[in-house]
Length: 474
Image (cartoon, rainbow, N blue to C red):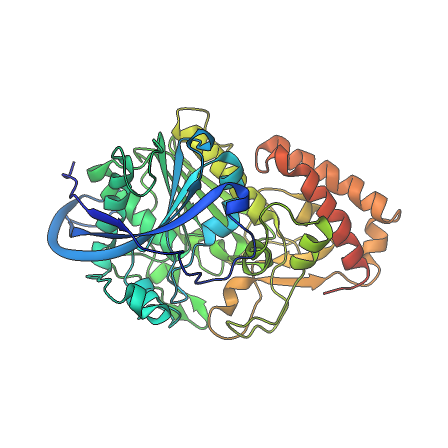
């Protein structure tokens, strides 16, 4: 085990500036938000020997360098409301901005559980730019506030993430005040999940800091210990076989739960990893879901848990007008990734605390080419976690088939069913649809993939969505 390096933590003055606007009030939900500077000395790592396919990487400390980064904290105002769990998110820098997609997908459940959330600027691109895409990195956004931050490079990102977590473990940490954590859960989506996969395989055996990991939307590309994240593209598709990462090691020290959409399995080719379940590893694959969707881009910005079902349903409708890029087709509009991710967090927290593991889930069925989803007569994917959005469809929902510029292929598609199909499937109209939807939803809840607490909201939104789909509203 490595010796923790002490860090200096100081709160940055004033309210944290919003990189991405949010239209719900954390204070009204009993939460406060604060931002901290974290400075210290971080180390990089080197692998000893080969990088085995099974993920059992042996690493050792290498060079060290000074760093100054930041951590964003959202936590209950009252200590009595704290669950004891801190969700630590490896902020995502793929769009050139310190994004928090797992907060966006799961914040409703984080807040109602009373968890604390800490977002860590672990990678250089979120601070200085220069990643996969140029975006509103911190120094560009607020140079007077963030201009002094200093990141030595992504080879040091693993230890920076560790040191923030170790600071949370220490009593009286400025990051969370008088809250006393019982569990630390590391979460990350997309590129962040790729870094966390390497962290689980190579760094966790050395530092033993986290109690569980949620790897969401892990792409089929490798992240090296030197910080290199290397997707390769051939003929418009990620060439995972030429750059296939290791599996999550079967002997993972603590629980690891992976959630993948159709996009992650096929377009981002994590099917090439061939990750089996083991005692401490579970893989969930979600049909009808894309790497990113309308909940993430639209609804999550306003959804503090108090939206009327009609308003939430409208925010979940398929769109093509994306400020960040051009897409050729309406993007994926299924909200179930949000609800399934919340269930995943609940399972992981219980599992990390010594409780039952999450259910073993069926995997998506792939076609003869081995890299695209096998689909039913209506075009929805077979296999995976069955759910009412694909088993009682109003539209064809896919993580595949999107075209456009930039990251467009990650947003999936929504397409109307053939004319007359809705009337044929649900001859009694909305009553027939809701009866079938409810039966399927209850089966998904009974399977453990959606939380019962979300049932009434999901049904209310489904009723509104039926009317929108029937009228052809988009």
